[in-house]
Length: 219
Image 1 (cartoon, rainbow, N blue to C red):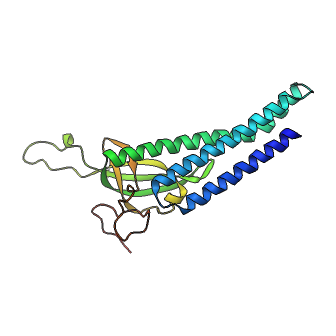
Image 2: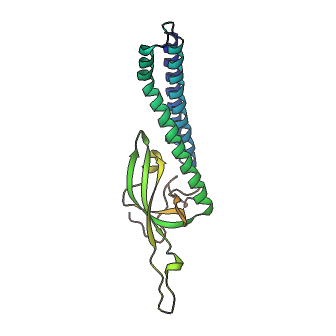
Image 3: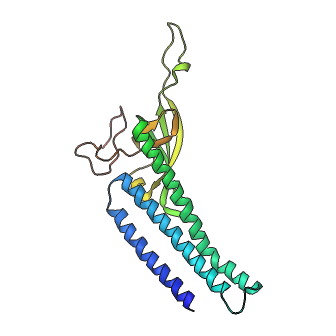
């Protein structure tokens, strides 16, 4: 009984902490802070799931009845939800960390190119994360432009790639929208759709996406 009460207290404390993080995420306007808070959120989700699973394991292992087949089956059934929460927290925080690292690389080494949003899909087991699929217009490979006086530059090559973004950032996008992406040309997966802190155009809304390079925007 004591273990059950302790588990309930852990869950309530974890939920309260997560609610506080959600409020912070809703208030922030900076893309980097969105990623940092989303990573912290999913780490905390995984921690709560792991603690609840550990409490259940301790309660069953220390039971005076012993850890027989019935107890083993009970633990297996009861531990499935917290273990699933632990796995989702680990997977989602890892995906966000990887994307945040790619964003830092893109801002440090990349170049701006036109991009078109082709799909926005909620990530499975993470409704506050969105898989953003885009077509990037990368410069043509010079080695393919041909030689001789009749050689002409090739049109930009289109590359389709994707990234995971917090939903609070992705809600500013729409399928078919033309935006500017910052991408490492040799590694199209290393890109970001949001400018660096303080790099927004004067007069634009905080966190807004810039217009696509060389494209007129429509009202």
